Length: 307
Image (cartoon, rainbow, N blue to C red; front, side, top):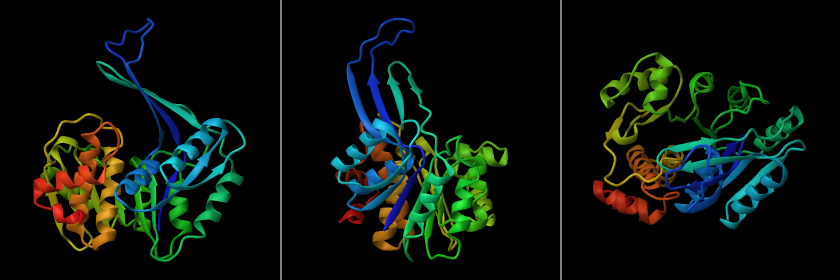
């Protein structure tokens, strides 16, 4: 089973406004509302690709209940811990001449709530996959990812970490199965600017030296590359298409990679599934569907990957 953890899920309220003007009344021309958060995004894309998962994390108040309800309507399994104080956040995303975002705070997660999460993690079995994705709320220990990986050390789990800076660096000694920085995040860790795949490869290998087993680096319009634990390097430009929405593309890449790996135990298949799933989400108004991913795989002669 795949488990995803979203510490601070949200209701994403996405509105489009023609020629937004500051300080004036603006009217929307489209409105969308979705459950959000990086782990939740991974679960939703996995579902689109035909793979079940269990979404874990924290929720609170009427917004938390709505997040759970929306996931249920999409037939996505969840087991969120209900927090007594506060409400799950609402993130407003404004699409106009420029994209702007206002992100909410989230509920007051306490030690007792965190202990409940550890009890849930005790239920993970040998061979399960755990996805830790996104930022840590300010009310939680900054070492949360590292603490979880230390707690689970010795279990036969594949742990995926999609985080930045110290959150990512601190887990490497516990040998995560997969990490997925983008090229800018990877460069920031080492204090360098990484613009080409040739630039990225040696620094992806440095992350392996620090403990990461497989390193998948997303590079937006430049595509992606994967450095594997058995010494292979896969790289590719992205498939052709028009970018509509970059939100969740990285999470979609993680979901696609896992779908490809689970179904084949093959890193090349996982890489191209990740690349095309991330791109399919970027080319659509919401998240990639199986059909959209299949169409993009055809550009690389890999359409058999989804059969």
